[in-house]
Every structure is written in C-alpha cells, then in structure tokens.
Image (cartoon, rainbow, N blue to C red; front, side):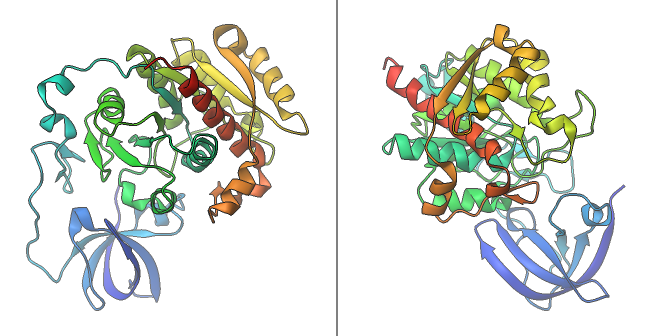
Length: 358
C-alpha cells in the first residue's frame, strides 16, 4: 500500500527541466523530496504539500528521497499535452505526453527496419555512461541516442547521469518508451523507439537501458533487467545489430552477481531468442578469460557470438568528462569490471558502425 504525509517545503535544493529537489518538514525536521514538475507542477518555499513516503518507509533504493504528490497551495493545475497518448495510464498521475508516432509522416510511419543500426542493450542504468563515453571516444562524430525503457524509474528527469551526459554532448538524443516519459521523443514501445532513434533522431547507434532503480527479487526470473532479451530480439527483428552489455562484478557481496551476473546468464539463455554479439573487455589483468569461462559454462558461447575487444581506459574517460559514476552505492573505481564490460559493448558498436553498409 502507498503511504502519504503532508508537510511544508523548507527549501529548494536544485532545479532542472522536469525536476525540483526540495527539503520538506514532515513534522520531525527537513527531509528530502523530488518534485516531478511534469506531473504536479512546481513548488515554492513555504508551500504545504502531500508527499509519497512509501519507498523511504520501506528502505528501498531511492537514495532516501520522498516524492511530492500534490501542492496543497493550489486547487487545480494543468498544462496542455502534445497529443492523446497517456503514460502512467489509469493512475491519479496519468499524463498526456503524446507520442512521436502520432506525428510521423507516411514514409516514417511505414518503417519496419533500422538499417543495421547497432543497438547496445544493458540492464543497469549506471552502465549507460561507460557505453556512451567509449563510443564518443572512438567515434567522435557518431550520433548517439539513448532509449530509456520503463523497467525502473519512469521519469527521465530523475537521472543525474542523463542530465550530465546531455550537458557534455556525449549523447545527442533521448527517447522514452513504454510508460517512461520525459525524453526528447516519446515512444509507445521499444520497437518504435528504435525506429524513432534511427529515422527521426537520425542516430548512428542506440543505447537501450532502463532508468535508475533496477528491480530484483533474488529469484531466477524476477528482475526487470530481463527486458534486455526482448530489446535484443526487437533489434534483430528490425534488422539492427544487437549487442548485449554484460553485467559483471568483482565487488558485489552477493554471490549471484560475482563474475558474470546471473541476470546476464538468465537473459542470454532464457530471454533472448536471436543470436547476438556478447563483447568482453580485453584489459590487464585479463578479466575476459574468467568472464568467458562463466559464459562457456552457461552455454552462452554456443548460442551467441562471444568476442573480446580492446577498450579505452573507461575510468580515465569518466575523469576527463568530469563524470562521477557509481553503481549500487560503489564508485566506479571500486568495481571497474562492470564499466569495462559496458565499454566493450560500446567498442563493439563502433566496429559495427564501420562495417555497416549504408
């Protein structure tokens, strides 16, 4: 069940398009809350607001932030939408974001191919910057689109990483699909999002990964990252080049995520029906050898094309772009293999770009 409390906005901590971060006094001193302004409008210091405290009450991974549900200082609020497609449908916060598909011309509407475009599919939002900076380093002129699915956070505005990547011109366009919202382009599903990336945003390469907050349950199938399989299959079906980003760790305390994560193993055995490319990073010491052994033991080498690729120093690229990347609360330097795997996927997409016939 949801939990709500009312309180007073004490201060505005930061603001950007689609998001305010504020402090709210709920009766025992200031607590942090996000305001998704596309859904509720903005708030000001002194406003009395209703706050959804559910995730913080449960101790979930929201970073200790509540969400403002409504501003009690106003009796009504609304802004006209661009179309008639609702996201967060059939909830009290359903919103008209429209969809890019509503506005396509006849030729674009009939598209069923992405013309060989390489698509990197990853499960963890924190791997996005590693894929993107690698592509930007190896192919500076490539046009990169980020497709955010609805497997985790729905508002793109919530992602600090995306805001930083856009500000640094590392990614060129954003597309939100399913019930995710707030991208440069809105899409109904992953298939149309990839078509929009290629034919409307004119991307050379797309990176598909959910927003912050992957869901996992310590069961074989109960994790949202399993969507990577359907993204890879969608890419194959659209005539693209599907590239799987491996999730791996040397630092995760959970045995199921050490080496190649069981999320990757399950996704590439159960959830992916097409044959895809699975790149591993060639770095010293040769971590790809152990990762390859994990994939071999799971039968993935027989089902997919497992390759080893040299990569740039992804931690140096983060530093060069002033990106402070963490995953599961750990700085990138504490678990580099996770980001090296993402860099390998980015490097593979650049190779695909060079081999693609226009």
